[in-house]
Image 1 (cartoon, one colour):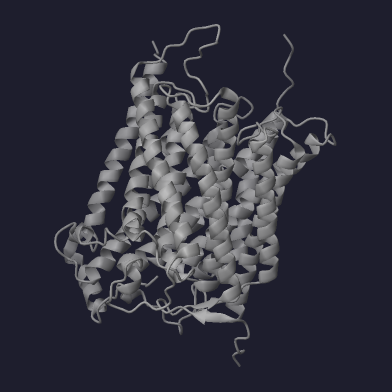
Image 2 (cartoon, one colour):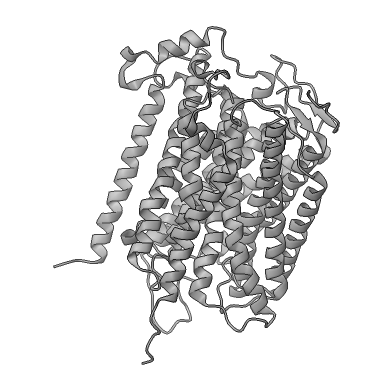
Length: 57
Length: 581
């Protein structure tokens, strides 16, 4: 994919922190798993397991 | 010191990329497996629409539900994931000029996936897994069905691991400079979401398998639903990321699209990684076991971050195409770049149709029906498949088909067979699917349930009468289904003929059109030498808010108006359901 001409990288410049974070594949993998496991799975499991038992009619 | 290249490779005549031959073979077999799965799924689709079309009502109940399960597994799992494995092998090796990590292990993983798929198919077709795609307990299938799913998932997870290892190799061996290309970044996003998905798949299917062989006494249906949807919906988010990566690739190949802003596009992919999997909670919005806070945080606050990402891509992909075309001199008016685009190139038409239907139909309906309050009017109606056929089929499958028209000459080194048919195939398939989606959505708006064999409830002890308009909408769905399946079968015929009997092509002479070779390969879009100055001029402040891509800005405005109208109309419909006061 070609970048627009004015955005050409200058390899002599230090790599910005944001770019280094975005390039860290395993950090992104860890964060993706963490957010899902906490917000969806963990919280959801807690909601189910903390339900009071239903009373029989 | 640079190490000599010791592995067998060839250099692509069109792109100049170094293609590792072992990785190329893995791309090919995964793509072929995807097309075989598509064939099974498409035949099942035809049987299903001809059953849900009440005027025909083809299949008996047992076979309807059986085939519905077959359709779901083949289309949503086997076709899509086999193709995504091909995308990962392609992006990780070809686009990075890298060698694959442990290619022999890739064959083991592919074999595992094939064995898993065959086990599932055998169990489903023989009637030992009539549990639908979701296989909710207490419905129980034969243990080999669950084992098949586990084999398939383990094989896919293995390939994802190899993709990550390939990225490490490419970085270590410096096959690319700086950050990885954006298309590979999109594939990496898909791979991360695949890990999230498959971890949940293991968490749900391993206990269910143990339950089916009697080692576990019972499966909690609510916990199953929670974990299963983290697999079932997230697997479709792998598609979204892979599809968007293909959008960027096809844009560059067909019209010389540029990346407007690397930071923005990559930020959108990171938003996918962090938040898109939470959309799984949509399926649990009417489950009583979860509180509103969990539902709203997951399907609104977090999920809207992923929606934002999709809207970013929905702007940057067409805007990149517009800027690329303008840099090549197509500068007349708002839409001159669009009028003069290569509409006869199936890679380009598939790209545009995928972007438009995914955004306008799939995206808008998805966000709307994923809202907790509105969802109550929609849940388990035919509107839900109306939505996801727009995303998974018109969006993802269409993009995959478009990519195939370029992969056939580039990877398989074969001309696209039935070239004239190939030129119209994206239009036929997309138009047919649009009818299916509209028919489903409108029928669902009248309350027609999803998955149900007989909406007349002919043997039920109570009477149900839908609006007569429902018959019209189901007929539209049926006619659309026939057209779409015809389009899918045309694609399969083109792919099979090209791969196995197609004319070999290894040279793409620039400037010379070739029957069966997309124009992006024979007439690669090249920007002029003064593109820098042109780009500066197009971004000049005096051009105002329209900027460098005024046409896309107008299209995005139309999209946002359509989005608002649909969203607020649904809130109005909700007020009809529950009148207050």
